[in-house]
Image 1 (tube, rainbow, N blue to C red):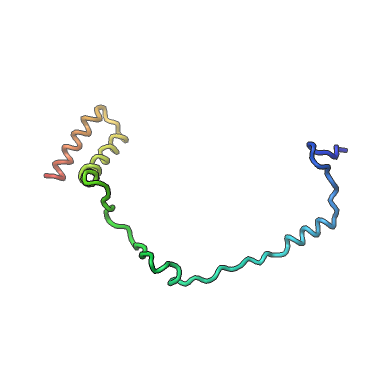
Image 2 (tube, rainbow, N blue to C red):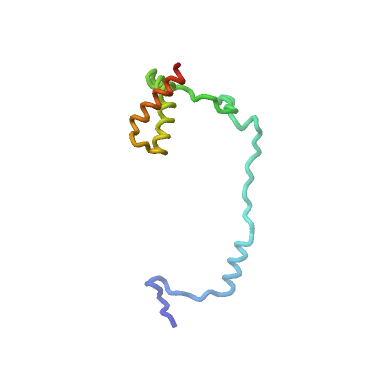
Length: 111
């Protein structure tokens, strides 16, 4: 027979059949959860909050200083496209390739 002291803790005790039935009955009873009050569409948002936009804008809102706005509008999209190509194809002379790409893009966009 095993030692009644298990790892220095309280000794094991024999569980009586009555305790098992009592515990099972306690868990068998469903708990009454309170139901949340019904919220109508009008009361869901306070009147002081602006309505949420229904669709995303076509272009992101320009933010930051004038220099940042200029770079984000005129340079960044073209530079990112060239850098994506560099990351995928890894040309032998990446700076020369990027310079040529930007020169060609300038002719397309700026005329």
